[in-house]
Length: 263
Image 1: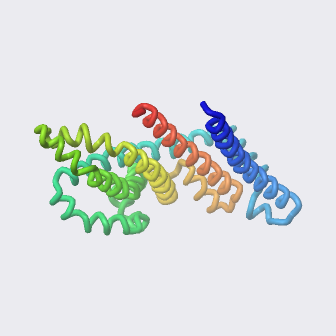
Image 2: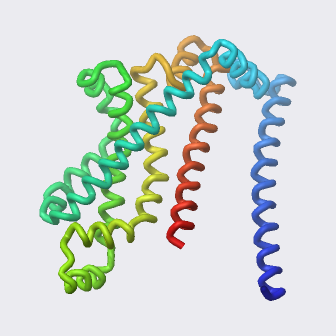
Image 3: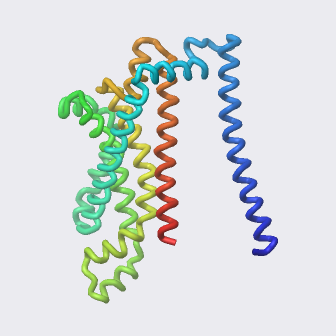
């Protein structure tokens, strides 16, 4: 390795650590400013709470045995809806790629469903599935599925047509083209869609818990707002932030593993 390459790698690593330090410093500075402002009365601690009160609320929930339970419920609902919507997204995108006329017929309907505010369907979902976990899963899938289908299908369509023709000259069947060309060529597209999909499922689950749930982080936030317990509300928001970060990081880890496997 040349000196120029070593210098470049050192500068890249130094820049990476600098960015990471500034990110944590910004968070630390915000938390300190928030706590000081609350302690000195610069802000109303009843309305805006404080980091100390948020931590105390989480400790209380943990001692009561409800903290991990609510986190587990939200995590289970998110992962289940993510798995189902991802699986159905790939399946329906494959059907649309397989039968082009089907894609042309359904295209305007997908466009309308994608632009439709899903929360407006909340009352209908409650009537169809009842006030239970099924409604929450369906709400999350409704939000994420259409985007997943459209993104994956567009990726399938963009595969090099010359490669498809080449496989056809070797008498490859359509399922072989899909298995050995279309699907591997769209691994990055599927991973990128999964990043968006996990976020959409998470949003859908929280929206569903706002409407029907009696457990989960969304329920904690809604209950806290009903009894004017702002400490509980902000604690729920902090938990959502940590959980969303963990879910997104898990997808990034899968992406890195898939890249290493391909390499």
